[in-house]
Image (cartoon, rainbow, N blue to C red):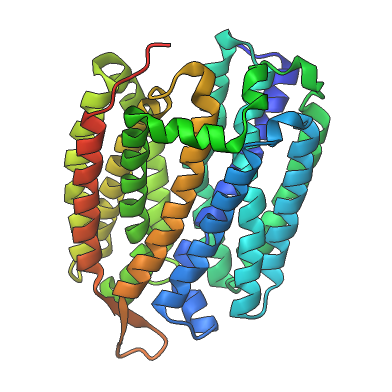
Length: 407
């Protein structure tokens, strides 16, 4: 599918905004060892730091779901991206744990709304015959951020300090803001391709509709179980690799580089396989296989860096592999006319689950002194792995009960 010059510039701007949002969200996790040392905080306090972003994003998405469609899309996008830039700048300028916590919460509020607005802008401006391809290009920013953006952020933190990635990210966001200003079309409210009845639906009606549907409750449960399992593990991969396996801060770059590049290749392939053989079947296959890297990552002994990278790359591939078909299953579980409200609630609940996951695993994991006074190992990670496996089994069971809506 070919795009006009205007469409290509619009896609580049939206993908750039998505790219910076994903980097801002992901880059904090590999900075865990540096932050724990710089602010003299525990693993549990670092978990709170991770959770602050996702919980505030969840609250913002949940609230905005009931009014954001009534506002001009372009204006909303510019205002929210401005807030995101200021929040990221506040992160880079923070000089205490408390200030960084507040800055992460502020960034989470705008980052949560930004993601929804980016995807909505694609739906507003691209006709149906171009929409899937456009959405795929914008969503490709996720893998690109993991493969290139996060490693660059880790490198900047290694040669400078923990706040350098946030300050550099602010510089990157400035031309993207002007790209959004120049290329996102100004669409009047009456031109939105939105069900007018959906705009009149109150928040309690949207929530009650989900509670009355067994299918949507199963989809919500599957989604939450997967997010809980994943985000109990992910924030502590870096501290575990540094303190227990022997990675340097700079070596962490290779985890995200290898994992991001691998999913850039495997993601589209898995999507095509799921379309061909059935989303539920492929989800159940990848959910089962993903148990292996979940256990390997959390039980890894002190091995060489190449072996550890094989394990972490498999983790990226199979976790991504189960997410791709599950997203289609979740979206397809609701009727078309009620889908936007359900997806908004699901997105908000995922943010809350990610935040709670970091808090739960932070309460399980404890620190152990090592020969190097600047580096601490962590214990309790295997128990986090067992909980992630149990949650994967629950997600697979709930996913097996899901029925796709044919609308």
